[in-house]
Image 1 (tube, rainbow, N blue to C red):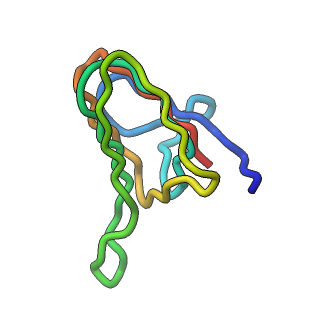
Image 2: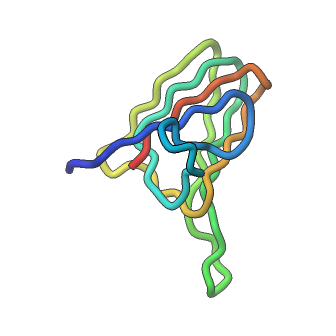
Length: 98
């Protein structure tokens, strides 16, 4: 499966922004993650459908130093704006999506 991959970078916690366009990353698939810091990260991409159910996923993982996470070709589907909860303000995360 081919995909046009893009990347987003964030220091600390907040909403992911595309590195090139500074647009909020939303409604996409996460393909890979690189994170540095120590503690638990949470990448959230969920939204509420018109019928009131939750769509999307949450990726939660722990890091001690740095880590690379490669997901399958189809990635993990995220709905709505993608936000990150990092363990410290100096923690960094790069998300490859598309």
